[in-house]
Length: 280
Ligand code: GUN
Image 1 (tube, rainbow, N blue to C red):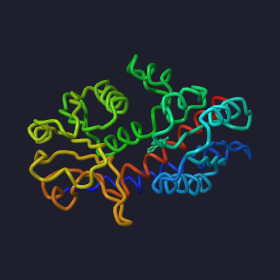
Image 2 (image 1 turned 180 degrees about the horizontal axis):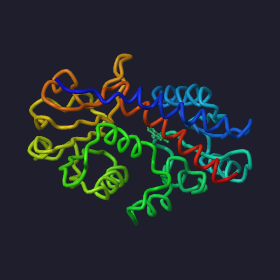
Image 3 (image 1 turned 90 degrees about the horizontal axis):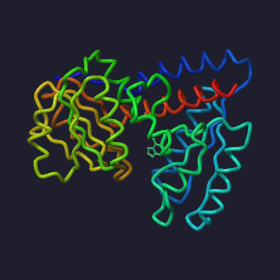
C-alpha cells in the first residue's frame, strides 16, 4: 500500500504561513493581476479557483477577461499598463492561450520583475544558468520540490523519469532536480522506449495531460510518483496516472485532484508575496 503525498494539506499549511505574513504588513496587501483570454472552460475554472483562494489568504486579485477576438496588440498594451501600475505586484496570463495568439510574444510583454510564473525568457534563462534557486521558482516546480521534501527523499543519484509535453517546462524541472543531485531523463509521452525508462525510475513525474496512461507495468516497485497532469472529462478531474492501478506497487503517490494542483496555487501566492515584499 502506498503513502499519499497530500498536496491539499501541505498547501493549507503553506497558505496559513502566507496569511500570517501578510497580516504583518498592517493592511497593505499584495496585488495579483490575472489575464484570462478566450473561453476555455478549464482555464475559466482555474482562474475562478485562484481568485477564490487568493481572497482567503489576503491577496487582492484583478481579473482581466478578454475574448479570443480581442486584438493581440490590445492585450500587450494592457500588460504594459499593468507593468507600470504601482498597485500591481504580480501578473499572470492563464495558459494555454487560444491558437490565434502568440504565447511567447504575450509572455515576453510582462515585466520580468512582475512575472509570477517565471515564464518570461529572461527569468527562464536565469533559472537554467545556475543552481542557486533560493529566490522564486515557477510555482509548479516549487510545488514538486516541496512535495518531494515532504517525504524526506534525498534526490542525490535518484533516477528520475520526467514525461513532459512542454520542452521549456521539462527542461526547467529537470534542471532544478539535477541541481539537487538527481539524474533526470526527459521523455515524451510517445517515446518508443518509454516503458523501459519509466519502469526503472526511482521517481516518475508525468506532465502530459493524458488521463490514466501511466499503468502498473510502467512503474518501478516502491517508486515515488508525482502526477502533474490534469484533464477534465465528464465533469471529473483526472490525472496522468491510473491511481487505482499503481497505488499498491509504489511507495508514494500524489493524488489528482488534491495533489500538485493545490500546491501550485499555494506557490503562486508564495511568489506573489515574495514579489510584493521586494517591491515594498
Ligand atoms: N495553466 C496551467 N497551469 C498554469 C500555470 O501554472 N500558470 C499559468 N499562467 N497558466 C497555467
